[in-house]
Image (tube, rainbow, N blue to C red):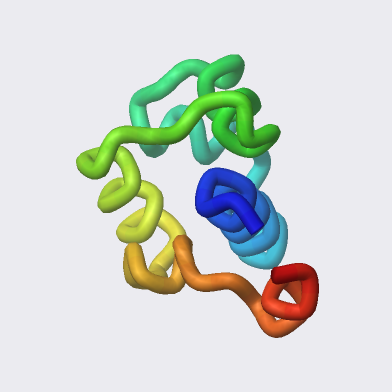
Length: 76
C-alpha cells in the first residue's frame, strides 16, 4: 500500500475516533478545510512539519500516522 494512502487513512481514522470534525482539525492545524480534505483523500501529502502538527493534535506519534494498521498490512 502506498505510504500516502496509509497516512491519509490513519489521519482520517484517528481524527474520527477522537470525535473531531475536519473543520476543527483544519482550524487547529492552521490549514484550509480544502487542503485537509485533499490530504485525507490521498491527493496531496503534508510536509514533515505538518505531519508533526497532525501527530501532536491527534495525540499520537508521527510513526503511528505512517504505520499500516493490521487491516492495511493484509493489503500489502
